[in-house]
Length: 399
Image (cartoon, rainbow, N blue to C red; front, side, top):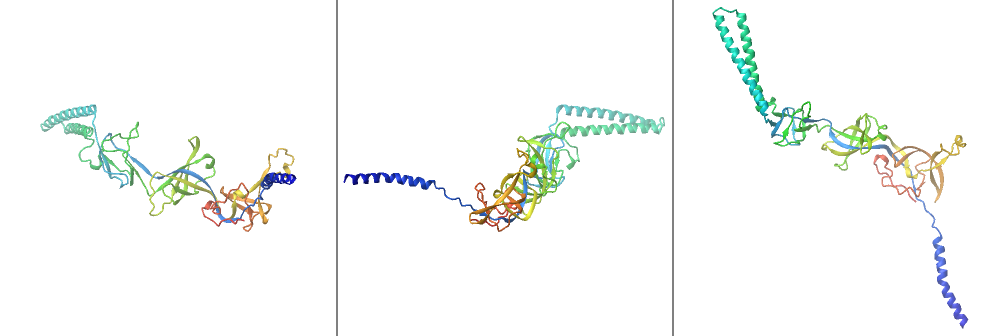
């Protein structure tokens, strides 16, 4: 009886131990990896580089005052369309005491000269009537009086300009009037009534009263990195995306590439400009931030696969067999094609244009082949068949 009980106890004690061994053995058995597959698709591939910048008017003019003074009137607001010669505002002169004093002194001096010339002319006319002097002598005094009178009138006009900034009868040609110099839309008025303004001179660019631009002719003004500038050239097509206008893409054409770069945020950047084809009923405001995709190369309707499906290994050329370091080894691309379920064979491929996501397949793969998705390839994106064209293709076949 004791032997039976002892055997039962040993058996019960061994059950947990046997169960643990069975669990560990089962856990140690690795599950077979099941690979998914994709097929090549016919898509449009575009190789692009991105430039950042903004949308600005091609022609923008800053209107400056003709004299120094204080803004007394403003007749425009941003957004108003004006014609060349339209009055934008008016400047009131604050005369300088020293300048006024000099102008008044000039008037007095010129008037004294004119009065003296008049007396001399009257005396000479009396002598001529008495036939004491010749007529030629009389003409000389008449000329002197006319010149003295003209100088007196000019001195009076100068005094009026110093005090009032204009003379009688000037109208719109008055230096007090700030007039539009071109046709267009007023996009900025940086001054207000009461602001002091300075005319443009050799030492100062002058105060801007208003900025006028042609809003019907907009361009993209941006920058590209020095590593990309050698790949672009004038005449290339651009796809411009304006940040403030969602779901809209504007076509553009590259017109200008700066011959010299500038350091911006620690990197050398080259300025570019491109004409924008504006759409009807689509208003673009000046200063919108935008990104431009510059199409470096494109191929429509080509057989392509995801670049993540391509694998590489290094193989020596016959000429490199003697090179122990294998410095000239080439990366040969290949994919794995499914022949039977979960059985794959290696097949070398010849690749063409790539947009960074999809790559053109020149040879080695057909549209019916099922290509193994490597473990490090990641899942296919929703637009995996769209390539650089932005189109959404058919979903890849999976197994």
